[in-house]
Image 1 (cartoon, protein in one colour):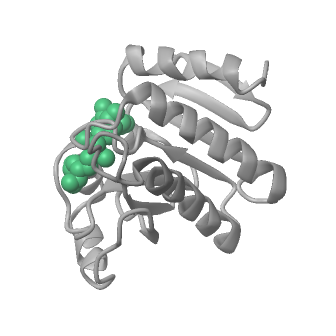
Image 2 (cartoon, helix red, strand yellow):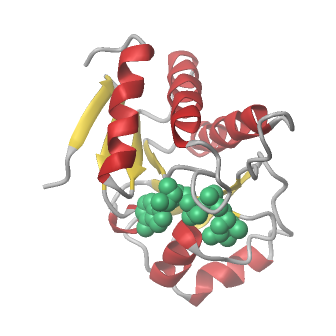
Amino acid sequence: MRVMTLISKKIEAVQGDITTLEIDAIVNAANTSLLGGGGVDGAIHRAAGPELLRECRTLGGCPTGEAKITKAYKLPSRYVVHTAGPVWRGGKKEEDTLLKNCYLNSLSLCQQNKIKTIAFPGISTGVYRFPKERAAQIAVTTVSGFLKNNTFPKKVIFVCFSDQDLLIYQKTRNYSGNHG
Ligand code: APR
């Protein structure tokens, strides 16, 4: 049983592997080429199979902060939303805004495609070294704000690869003022 934390009525945090989720859409923390990589990007491409890369090649890349949608092929989800997060450069190169845009643009694709449930990994918090607590705060605040003003998605899941990462999301719940 995955450990799940309710951050608000429509937002959950779980510990697990995002490639196993049977939901409408999972988000890929990609790079601007959209041609695959390591981390969650590598895991998603491995699980989806080669057709995912074939479709990604038709997209012409993805600027940092933007998001593009593809089918999910062999993954249990229906769609993959690819977004390129910012590389952490100390916090004075618009990293917060770019990370916020990753969430907003991914959520806008849910609104456009009437996607009910979407799962996010910790965008930019691995290879791109964005501080995890700061990223989680941006994620929870941005998603909460979007859900208040939009009808889709109906549910957002933050998928934490490690227990420590889940703990970070549990702590952000208190700041965002949502208790269950
Ligand atoms: N499920 C859920 N989360 C995962 C998984 C997985 N299977 N694998 C890794 N993660 C987590 C990491 O622990 C981290 O918290 O995803 C978060 C993002 O880490 P990265 O995958 O390294 O992504 P990011 O920091 O955004 O760097 C992107 O890395 O893989 C390359 O092609 C990618 O160049 C791009 C860069």
